[in-house]
Image (cartoon, rainbow, N blue to C red; front, side, top):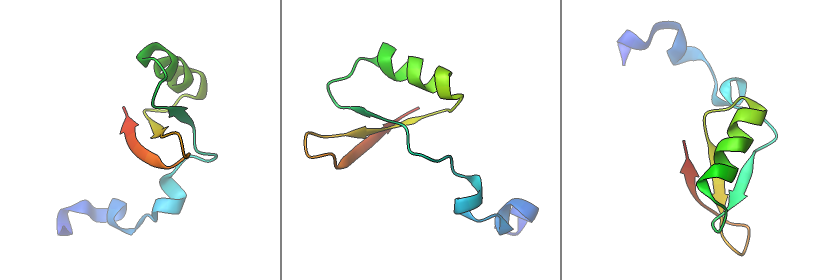
Length: 58
């Protein structure tokens, strides 16, 4: 872990994007890709029918 340097001191809250961009589990991969492109992010959270996170698409 010592090789992390300055990245080892950056907090998650400072590296995350907000608000959370998400898709439902029934969404298409194309829909997820379009959201990622629109918001210039590398992944979206996948929610189930109860709006609980069940995965991430990157």
